[in-house]
Length: 220
Image (cartoon, rainbow, N blue to C red; front, side, top):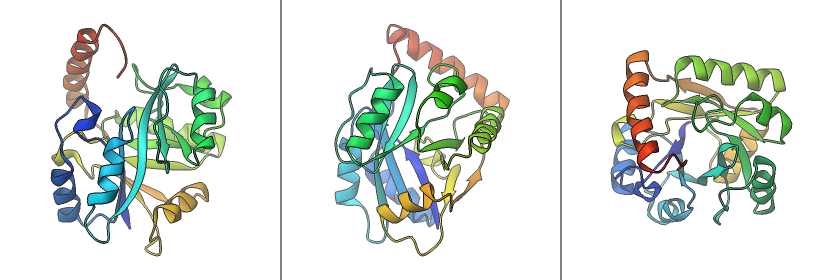
């Protein structure tokens, strides 16, 4: 089963993508599961769980802005406060029954970086991100392999035509969100897809820097 474990909705504040558009594209591609991971809010995930078409598994999530970088909190139903250290953020995620995934570790302005990941008890590492450079994804995979960590993949889509560019592949007998979590932690998944080309990375980087400056040089 193919699953996109990193999708944003308009609740993230940096795009206008609506759930109806997401579900339409997901069904067109025949994906079996999604994780909605809006920036610092569970709202999009809760809505997705209620409105998802029959047969689509929704793994609820948040992309949390920690003081050290972005962390995907998966399989929880409450918000996680932003602005804490990576260690504090992971503790809160675990206390809420979720798992903590190091998002796009080597992204310049929002990745956690090697030393933070090595120093904290992350449950998994996102090794394939559709908005990451291919080099960054390769470094993430090498890090996960060296640390013997479970891993995930997701498009990080902010628009429908980016959905499915990076995926996590599960066995077909996974039929619930809890099954997905168990498979990730047991390392019974694969990843499939691609990151950004050099040209796309330059374009994306210039836009992101402009948005970052307009926010007063603050992370989302």
